Length: 258
Image 1: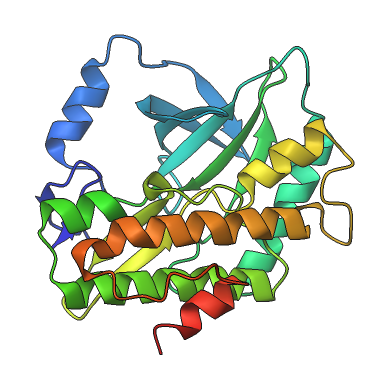
Image 2: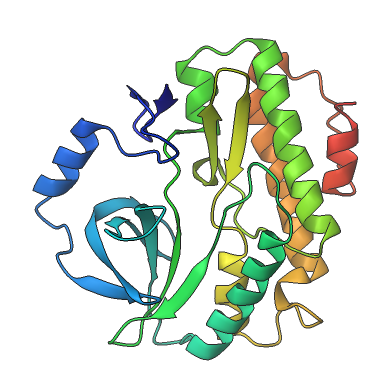
């Protein structure tokens, strides 16, 4: 069994995780659901409907009939008149992040990130659809034990520390970007939207995070660490035995679980 993003338990069909029937029906009946296709590489992705909204854009569930995975998310980035996105710079930066992630075969990191540009000039990002609850919703609704909370928190810190060791800043660590997946053997955390916000910022403001990778600036990583420390307090809840002195790095936080 696995868990849909809405929290419902669903059967896993082979290697592919799909939304629960209720979510598919809801998305199909969504009155404001997009009906257009957008090109994703050589395969069109049919937008089924919006499933999330953030400060930089709207996330849609999409279906690719002839590719694996078939269900993906498409994040359409909002256009801004005062700070327009340089599409080529955005795509180049995110492709660099994707190549780095593909060289780090580790559970919890996405299989791919595909940036692109729509016909009307908006940039978007395609990523695997990960069914499951956000980490804070999971530990709250499941009344998770202190042991499970600590295990999830430790895995999250290890993932972020690993990204930072390879010069990758997440840029948007928040509960909705950390999804909990379940298997018979263990709980895992999966990070969504890795590098997307730094790519947006870097393409709107080219001087942000200059270096071999625009998203590897110390400022972005410092914000990651601050956001991670705040998120840990929500995850651990009453079991917050963690040393809460300001951490120097994600690796510092990860080491506190040893």
